[in-house]
Each structure stands twice: as structure tokens, then as C-alpha cells.
Amino acid sequence: TLLDHFSVVLAMLIGVTWYRQTRALVRGPLEWGVAIAACVALALAASGAAYVAILLVAFAAGWLASPVPSQRLELRVTRRDGQLLAALAALIVVFALPLPHPLDSALLWPRLAGAGMTLFGGGFSALPVLKTLFVTPAVGITNDDFTLAFTLSPLSPGPLLNVVPFFGYLVDGWVGALVATLALFVPSGCLVVLARRHLHRMKANPRFEHAMRGLRAATTAFLAIAVWHIARHVPLHLSYLLTAVFSAMCFGKLKLPAYAVYATVGLACGARLLLA
Image (cartoon, rainbow, N blue to C red; front, side):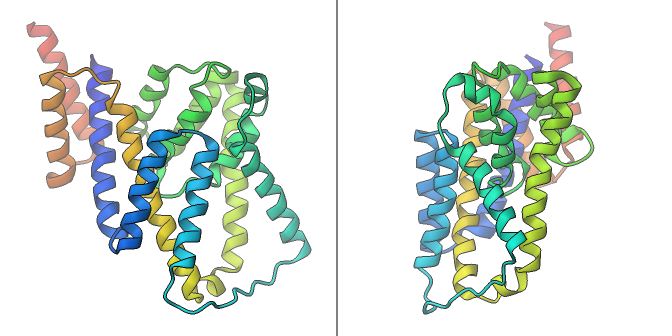
């Protein structure tokens, strides 16, 4: 019961985050079209290939729909940079390709590395992506364990993606926790460092900036689908509706910290069970 109430709190926290990001990132017809299309695509197909395709199509749509005439994006990529980009692209391909169950488990960490480079829009947007990787028969993490980890992640110090070492621990103990952390953060960190060298030239290109607007609009769909993934497993009961309304008011209007809302809901749930 407590886990279900905490799941509702998490769904409302992600929902408020989605609302704020949508107001900031989704404005024109292009952004709305990309965001709605991405929501529909994610609802119909939850897979690595779908996530990568949505981001690529959103970027391409923004690039092609740019009102600025075509302008060449000149980047000076060294041979070492090219080799690094090829290796990172290979990891993304491994994540996107549908694999049979034995390979799905054997290539879990390379697939996690590829997934890490597709996580745009904040930690909550990673929920559907990570669920595709870990909540499978080959890996063996249950939906309850996955939801519990994400539910409690706002209460622990550090970034929201600190759930990844926990998933790694469930898969292969302390070794799995270490490998999962390295797999998620090292390749994506290399990509950030590489992009930082060329950030000035990229931001100076209007078509690239317009393409990034489409990409950022698509990331709001990941938040919407994350709420759906949580909400569909919560029983339809008045008490959960009250928790949802209370959490939405605390996060949206009062802007209370997550631990305060979790503590209040936990105490209310405990008092209700004692009095029942």
C-alpha cells in the first residue's frame, strides 16, 4: 500500500516536471507536432529502436523545418575524435537493435552505455528507457523493484540516475553496481567532452539550434510516458486519487521538497492503517 502511494507521489512529481518543461520547450507548431507524435510513438512501441528513432526524427524534423537557408555545419574532427564517435555510435546501435534473450542479458552493459547517450530531458525521462533494459525476463528485475527504486530516488542525495547502480547491484552484486555506473556515465561523459569542443560552432548554426528545439520537444514525451508507466500499475481507489491531488498541489503550487511530501504521505498512510 505504501509503495503504491509513493508511486503516485512520484508520478505527480514527474507530471509537474513534464508540465514545466512543456511550457518552456513546446511553443510553436513544430514543437507541438514533435511532442504529440513522440508520445504516440512511445505508447505504441517501447523499445531501444523506438527511442533512438524518435530522437533522430525529431532532430531531422527541426533541421529540415528551419526557416534559415541551408548552412553547412563545419566541424574540425580529428582522427581520434572520429574513432571515439564511431565507438559511441556502435554502442547506440547495440542499444537500438532488437536482440534475443541470451544476447539481451549478455550485452546488458554495452546496451546501457548506448542508452546513456540517448537520455535527454533530465533523470525522470530515463524511466521508460531503463525499464526497457532492466525489466525483462532475461535480466530478471521485477516491475515492483524497478518502481521502488525510482520512487525512492528523489529522496537520496545525488542525481536521479543514482538508481542505476542499484539496478546493477540487483543484477550482479557490487560488481554489477560498479559496471553499471561506469557503463552509464563514462561513454556519455566522453560525448559531452567531445561536444564541448565544438559547442560554439554548433550553437552559431541556426539550423542546428532549430533542430535542437525539435529534439528537446521530443524529450517531453519521455516524461509523459514515464507517468503512464507508473499510473497504470496503481489501483483505482479514492485514497490514491487524494494522494495524487495532494502531491500535485505540493509540487505545483507550494513547491515543497520531495522528502517533505513523501514523509507526509507516509505518515498519513501509517496513521490510516493503524486506525483501520
